[in-house]
Length: 385
Image 1 (cartoon, one colour):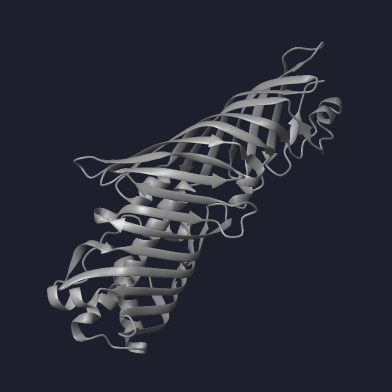
Image 2 (image 1 turned 60 degrees about the vertical axis):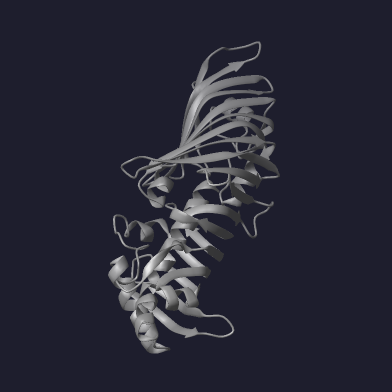
């Protein structure tokens, strides 16, 4: 959810780039229809560096000034697609003071992917003034509303979001709301800025629990940003939380603890790509899904189908966004399940799990090593004879 908020801000900036041609066209009183669509295509291609097609475009003054484009698509292996983009400029401010401000931007039925957005790294000018005759206001975009914004991750899993962001100067969100429509349980993120400070109160609901806290942003003299934050997850059902982002969890149970987050970069995109979290968690009513540990031990790993209820589980979890997806690293794992206690560590990355540890059998053997490796959906369990 945290990274999804950063991606939503980036999507708002991208919308401004795609409609840059419309702003230039104001200087000659916008053409309409096909001519406007072609002008938007040309300016978007200049700013983004890839070919862009626009199915239709129009502008109107009543009942409210608006410039609208439909069926926008970039020419890429995995294209960016936008069903509808609408911008509502403050026309009077533009005509009288030659200052361009968008009161509200709307984005509907958009599909963005990690691969497609990666093609725009390092390109400047997406949020610059559209032409020499006009200047951007202190808040060039006041409000960004998006519906059915689908993000496709490195692993190809699509996740759709709805939300709204109200901006202060320098693209600082004054308040923001993010939702996961269709999630098995309500999943929301709400941010509210502390006055004019670069701090935000965060309220998160996911998996039937909460993770409230705060975030802060610092800017260096060289223009690099550092994002930090602290959250307090409480009573979050792990499997339901993973299902919120369309992923199957190897574990169910209610997680509580403490999470810190950090990121560093010179843009919103860099912050999202560098985001990492550290969590100290305890899980109540835990169940290892799709693995019967007792059966795996008795058959030396030949049979494993089933589940393993846990009496207790504590762990340290680190997540790290990378160019090849999010890496999940579990350390200091301590679990008790019936006649077994276990300790170990694991890494889940690129749909694979690699875990190792030792099993202590109550009133029996001590320190029996084991490994679990292979596809997350069906890993291989190995124990010695």
